[in-house]
Amino acid sequence: MDNLLEVKDLHFAYGEHQVLNGINLNIPRGKIVGIMGVSGSGKSTLLRHFGGQLRPQRGSVSFMGKVVHELSNDELYEMRLKLGMMFQVSGLFTDISVFDNMAFPLREHTKLSEEFIRDLVLMKLNAVGLRNARDLMPSELSGGMERRVALARATVTDPELIIYDEPFAGLDPISLNTIANLIRKLNDALGVSSVVVTYDLSESLKIVDYVYFIHDGKVVAEGNVDEVNNSQDPFVRQFLDAKPDGPIAFQAPARPYREDLRLQA
Image (cartoon, rainbow, N blue to C red; front, side, top):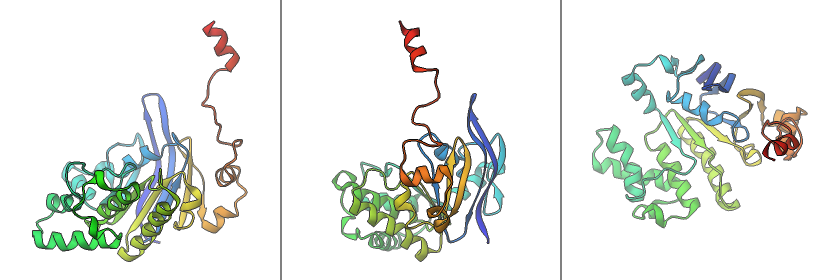
């Protein structure tokens, strides 16, 4: 299968803190891939390598056949135009309307006429059910509406790859289900590839084609939806069943609690 993005033996550390420890994964064309992991597992650092914000200490990320960290500044800028991003906190500009938020990347990166931009923005907003919200300010949107606008903006330049960073965080069940269904429908309608980075496994398994589980900067399990649901891997089972005990420890590594108390006395 043709892969749009490939990660090979990726290593990265912040100082002496090793975050990525040899990650290998692929994002096939036209598919939705989930990347699951608890906070601090390396998900956000991995995404920064996708866009070339960080350079690997070892290994590589390749996008559309080109190694990202080997690109020049001009080539990197051109590559980023082929990436769409739905940020964890939506990332809408607070001082301009929904319409202008949508139009901004088109005005910034294309030479399209305002008439064409208007038609394109309305089409994208219509796809997420918010064409009538075009004149509202972000502060006038509910949390679910804000996420839908952010989702539409991620698709407005017709990118090759759309990245969703914690798209379900803080949403009520109805909004969450709406966003999940929109991600699936837009991916299939646009023929793009998508990456859903989240810790909400139950909702993600309804829409993804393949899942990678990351822990301590490594891929510890992977598989399609059926393989994940039927897995007996301790890490996957802990994630699926929300168990407090398992390979993922609740407490961060530290000296024994009693010893810590004695040191404070």
